[in-house]
Amino acid sequence: MLWQKDIIVVREHTNILEIGVEVVFLIFIMDLLMYIFHRIAHFPFFYNLIHLRHHKHESTNAISLFVLHPIEALGFGFLIILVIFIYSFSYLAISLYLFINLLWGTIGHLDKEILPKQLAGLKPGLLGGTKFHNEHHKHPHYNYGFYTVLWDKIFGTYK
Image (cartoon, rainbow, N blue to C red):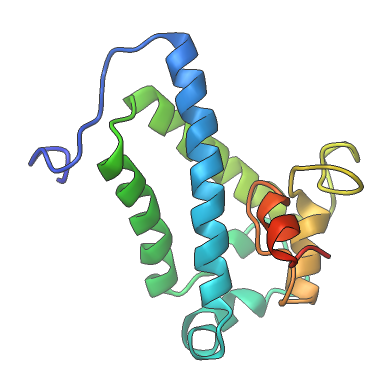
């Protein structure tokens, strides 16, 4: 609807290099925004109101990603709309990003690490894999990142 009313602009034609750069940028900026949103969701008022339901899954599994309060789901959706509003991405970059988002979120909530140790956010990795996010479900004051451990390391919330 926002696209149809020209409130957000999505480009149709672009080259493979631009698509790759846009996907990397979307992952980077959304990782920061989701880290901030997730930290706010852990403030006591918001945690008890909307985020506690998600943390009832201490032993995470493939559906844990989808256990969200509707306000939380809308909040995450608003973040991507905000980013698309600010910059006109190609529809292919948005589509690839959304696929990666779903895949990464599912991987992060599995009960067993499937990523190689070097990629899994373990020493000295950058990506936040299953073990990284499972630690968050066990210790909710750490590991707020989604795709990477970068923001947790910068802001001192990495465990």
